[in-house]
Image (cartoon, rainbow over all chains, first blue to last red; front, side, top):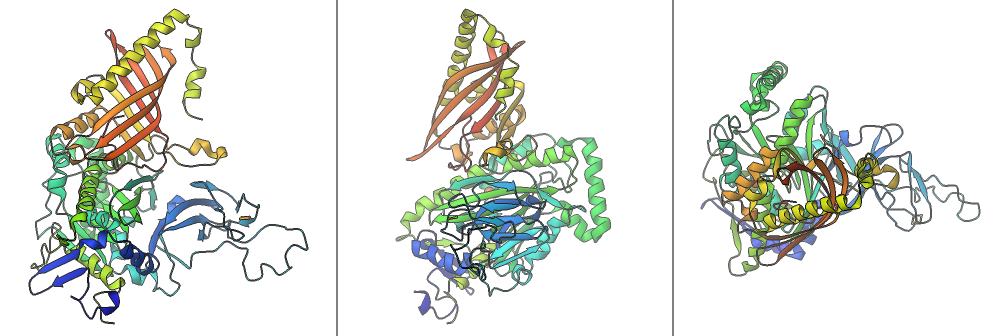
Length: 432
Length: 186
Ligand code: FES
Ligand SMILES: [Fe+2]
């Protein structure tokens, strides 16, 4: 199918018609095993994929294990402090070398036959003479395998399984500057707050992706959350202004990345105070905003303090700088199922009281026990279930705001940037 | 290991004569069964009336660690969690369900709470610390089924001739959550 495509518009999965202002995506893209295989090969094996934040392995010898893009990885710092990402598999006969979630160790030992490795990956076992030739490991066949590429931007580490991929910064395009808006929120650095939320959803991974920066659904799906903000004294600073073209926008950040940016009623620890936080917090939050303005000028300073950003870095890293900062990745396990990892990021030196509000904000809105995520998940699973109808009703509509020169946060422009890149990477919709 | 070991050490409860222990055990169990019936019968406001004003309703995150790192098995207060609620948030959760547009519970799911292995760990003043094993079955829409199994540590506080729930700490026996949400109460 893909090989026969001759130009945009010929893609079997994405149909964009600029003249008619319509943009449609085939529902089969969410259900077919063949699509998932193409995604693995052309997207997850070729794009820069988020592996972790530097603060998760702050000390020498710290390590953690994580599933990333269908692999089992060890993400660690060696004795000298250098950061590595290894495939978590023993070079001998393939057992998993590290079996726990996190720890601190000078090396790793495979429990199967006992091969051991320094935390820089080098084989470190004395095996009695005569079993292997003396130059057995000359080519490194007994060392742990490192991921082909590992690079970072402002503490966010990414891997790439394609040795020939372009560099991370080039790949991130305009998304790099949006990461900076998060990283610059603290003068002493940002950190992941202890603990990863891990949960499964019965939906295609691209459904969660669209949902992560979908301003259009907020008012309907999350009506109860906004009611709560409106009805709880001191929780509301201003209306949610997703559709206001002057103050909210949907942005293509290049290479398939996109975001929405908008003012919202909730409190932001950086730096939009709400009454519920009390007068002491007010002085602190205002000082924080003044400091941002001092460091970065009024435009960028106020933007960091007051505006919310939901960003998707292609293909599957979400950084939402909203009532708290969410960092989230998710992977398909089957076409109809995904696995989520979610963290929250905060300034390292944050005052205890503000940290408490931040976590409160996070848990109140996000995660399986939050006020919003369960409703989102309900919607995603509902879509996935209904895609059984795709033979007769085969197309999703993603056209909202196509006629506008500057789309708002409740339009779908940012999703279109994702789908164009997805389509290009899958080999459809571009001239051969 | 888990916090109960400490609690058990401080406990003078085992020295109490058996008839008294049986009476309290009976009272506690009947309270817990009645509470479960309120949740399963969707009488959430009646359930809410059983909560103490200073309740801490908390579910930390659990992770796989080696046996020498068991102290890192659960996240601590101040870390990430799944629930870290006070009475105000629990009230908001109910209001959300009552609004009729809480899509994860509209249409409402069907649940059954089983509580067992009820052990009174400690009696101090008017507070009883109780450990239970729970098994919750939830059926949703046509065919979605979730089950959650784990341990709960409750503090029940005397209130008239019954109790109020002053603390509920929930320790799931799962590290990766297999259900789409936690829209039921534990
Ligand atoms: S498989 Fe690891 S030592 Fe044999
Ligand atoms: Fe949402």
